[in-house]
Image (cartoon, rainbow, N blue to C red; front, side, top):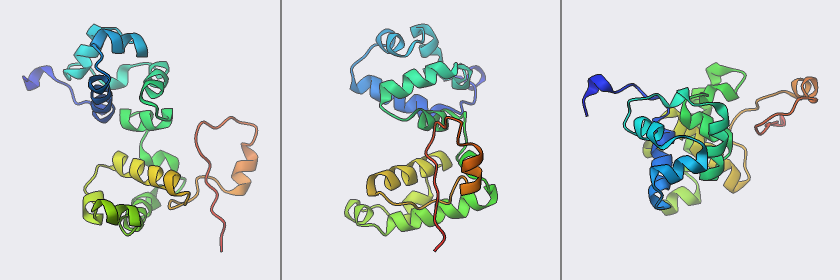
Length: 172
């Protein structure tokens, strides 16, 4: 592909996942476009790397999330609209918290059974690292990452609808 005609695509991870699922479901671009509300020709241009994925409307992210069976926030992460650090108040703590969580995951029975090492987990990009940690937390019912809101902060915004999981870690 001619690099002059391509753009850097922050949403490549989501595009790759969407393309994988489309092929798995044996859908044409037109059929996928119909399901998620994007014209097939626009999908083709995005998959070819000539259009930025970020240019799509947030409503489309919701339709993509529904099609993929993922929480919309995961699609925002993979699509480049959000960064993993957006989920933490103390952004300086994010890298070490994720690395500590990955270390714990690498020592888990699941990782040992699958042959997954800490080194392999550490080599993933930041969005995928966070996704692995969040999926592990969900599957194992554990909390590995620091809190997003304090109890006081949660009370202050309790009347708001929050489209993400609120984590409250109790101090021992």
